[in-house]
Image (cartoon, rainbow, N blue to C red):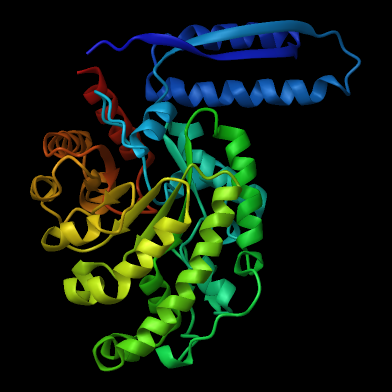
Amino acid sequence: MNHPRRRIFTWTAFLPKRLVRILLSRCAVRADCTPSNLARWATIRRAASAANAAHSNSGKKWKFFEFSVNLPNSSRARILKLLRGLRSETIPCFSALSSLIAPALETRGLRFHEIHHDTSKMVDAAAAAYELYGWQSATLPTNLIVEAEALGAVIDFRADMPEAMWPLVAEPLFASPSDVLVPRGDFARRGSIPLICDALRQLKQRVGNDIVVGAWIAGPFTLANYVVAFDTLLPEVKQAPNEVARALDLFTEALISVANAYQDAGADFITIHEMGGSPGVVGPRAFGELILPRIQRIVRAVSAPTILSVCGNTNQAMELLAQAGANALHVEHTNDLARSREILGRDVLLFGNLDPVKVIAQGDAEKIRAAVERAANAGVDAVMPGCDLYLQTPAENLRALIEATHQLLKN
């Protein structure tokens, strides 16, 4: 399929003549919008931004220079339209969750355990997959326990591990749901949330003209999983549902505050990652009675597009998930995607569901290509990893995923 090309970037700058020659040579490559050239374009934009910033403090001779680049229809524009329910002939590939991988962090000279409380490092890490490989989204925060930390939980950032690993809550904050308390005041001002909002603003400025910038929050039950003793939480879903509901209400209000703060900081979409409280984990009945109403409340409170991301096989509960009212549903690789689409019909956007470990991280280019084609043929609206990217995903495998969806777009 040939897609009409249109002019979407015009850059005006005062630039040194040498940089003009470099930019012109790089722009010549942009006639073909391949993943590698998308990464080159990110480099060009950073160079031009730096040149503009230096202009006012330099006594050197600068050349006034304007250039435009012709590209296929912007993937950012397509994804934003899709999130508003406007499908196109092409199927995008991006992530509703984290796109961090260890090889990108190593290329940037970043250590995973150091990025969670440093705004500059957060931005460098989040932008890396796009700037290095051409990945079509960037998301923050850099972990899913931000809200648990803001509640006061002690976090183990795994600094002593030989390879990048996700942070963990060191110990439960509450012995049971009846003990749950949320500090008064603006919850979005607690912990590292203000730093993340600053990072979102910087990330949006850095890559937000090119790709979508998203933010993700824990679902209410997932947050409960992090901070309430697990051996009491699940039993009390049946034995003390009113106490569980009270705790989830407190968490929901806190999460709404965080989601709105991320939205105000520039997030193009908000993902609610209810991995611990999905119907595939707690069962459809508990989900429908305790968790669904709280997710609906979050969705109603956020004006940005929302994506509900769930774990486990949820084919038996797709209609329940659709009742959440999110703009899109994101399911993992254990779902029969064609069956999920059949149940939902065409009224609900469906994203997924490549196995992030066995396919994306451990598969070869052919296995990745076949998985992308299967997802597309099953009726997915956006090809995505079934969860966040596995941290140890090789860079060449992420490139293979991008190339596979690029070929899908061309064909």
